Image (cartoon, helix red, strand yellow):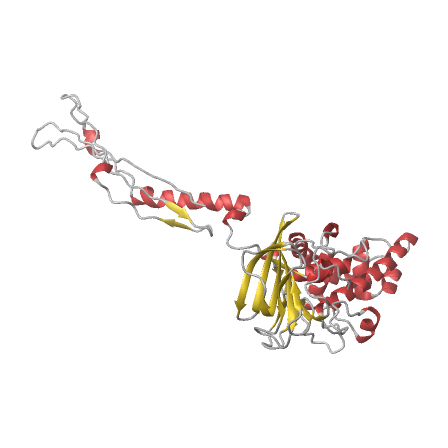
Length: 424
């Protein structure tokens, strides 16, 4: 946003009558012109430009003002201080300060820069603290089991329990949701289909916490229906989680020793509400169910979507797609009609193909196919679902033949399996 303030002042001084010479004073008028511009950058800061040099074209000459010959100055007029024009502060600094104050006021009233002036994406669209927005689909799925528990409530609860960190200081409580061995035997499953059920797998932990919370919500709902307890079902559910259902039942409400946990979770809710709200719902209205066809003949998952430690680099970060195990040279096909956006070799992904499938519900859909051993398409080519794009390989950073398959919606990585209609 650019705010310009122009300040121009004409300073007029009258030359007095020279008494010693007895000559009549002629008053001449001289104009000076200064200009300052205050430019506010995208970050809302303001820089005041230096005054421009006065040029002959800038000087405004006025015809001399002639006074009546008999207009002799009185003693009071002679003693009266000569009027001075505005100083440098009034001419240069003041307009800049006024402009800066105006910009600051505008930003304060409007909550900062408008979206078109912001520097980069809103962090809430991609992450909050230690959790990536890629876990939002799992949070939604985990909350589907009941109406009391919401995706943002689960996320805030995990944040309070562990800060979304798997590195727990407790030997008895494991993973981001702090499950004990006994609890995990009850609620844990291999939800991300990676061949193991572990509280250290974030997807498994999210789903397990959802099942546990929904079971607690069902119990406190029955207690409230019976009139045994009173209060918000969300509060009662969180209280039952932290102190146990029997304690809640005896208290008839949220016990005092559960209030701190409730308050801490609720303090975190707004940020996760924003994250969930701004993350596309890939399952909303069943739009993502079987939208894509399988890119390989058999969908054998060898590494699922989500956080993982890379087998070669050792770095733990988001695994942006799904790895499907397949033999070297197996056929890889387009998952949907579209246009080849990229077909070439990259350092990490090896031989890679990117297909643009156009828009779905106003959002751009893309798929990628990586670590190929050969290309069967070229950039700009139009393909149909099921048509060949390349062969399975192990190029780039890869430990063996497989297809790394990704789904992007408006540039954001999504879990590919729901888009392929694959049940968990």
